[in-house]
Image (tube, rainbow, N blue to C red; front, side, top):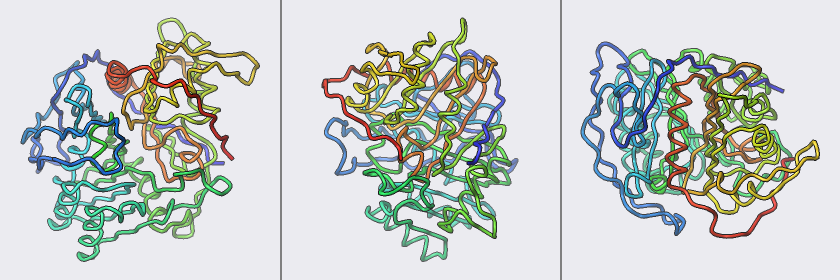
Length: 440
């Protein structure tokens, strides 16, 4: 099995205050680029037809034409982007923006808008129905950037996605559509319902000679605007090289490229920073949680994951609750909240009953674990984030990517994001408790 190499990102420790609105642009990719971001087209998208009835249909407000080059020290924006030396994190906050927030999708559009001749954009995406993202990516191609796309078959079911595929292929760009996950499973068949997909929201950007890896929880579909989402952009050549090797395998739809086959060991990047790609048997999230111990002065575990269904991860959450961790947990479904809150037995035979007040439900699509505790014997600040829900599919059947970002700055930003969602969340409105299938 491939050992996931943990991404450890050294960032400056600062006290952060949560604020609403605004977006800090990342450092300029080259001296030739302006510190002020190019104007992004206003994004106004009608939510997809299959949007759940509980999601608001308000469209995002028109965004400002430019964004400030830096975010004031010590402040974290709920809606927008926050920047440290080699890391940018962006959040959407529909709870503070009238029910709809385009901040994370807008950042992708801005990055596409920065690319021109000599630059490259490689995108792997699950769903695509936002015309503005199509226009922005095709615009980069027309300005001379190299553009490659690896997409799930769902992209071809939406007008914006079909237009994207047609325009990229007409211009000679690479556009691969995978029927199911691009890469072979690690689990036994058949795949769980709604799994076996290219679930990535991944961008590899080489702009002005500066390389970055962007991974996010947001698809390019309108209903995401009513959901809490986040984006992490890491500037690191080593991580970029690792992600490029993964992208090449997605494009080839094989773990073997140029005679080199990736097994579980090669599917992890040690960093710093750290990453793991999927499908695989071992899991960056689980291995990290197993190393966490809460101690006086370091006992915060904030979790916002749209869907949690794995018994092994639930067991670690329960152990941390018994360990005295202060926990806030946000999911997107009442049934998932109830499953976590119901008393359950740990492998050692003890029973855990997570306090109902610590587990809430909100419309979220995020995947975040923000931890300040003793990790592998040392007090650390750790964030796990990326594309994967805590499901069997996210581990064994889907194309996914997870990052580990270490440092107080990243922790405080993501903890504030979870706190924002928790503040706007509610207790489950049904008492039904589902029985989850076990991974196979």
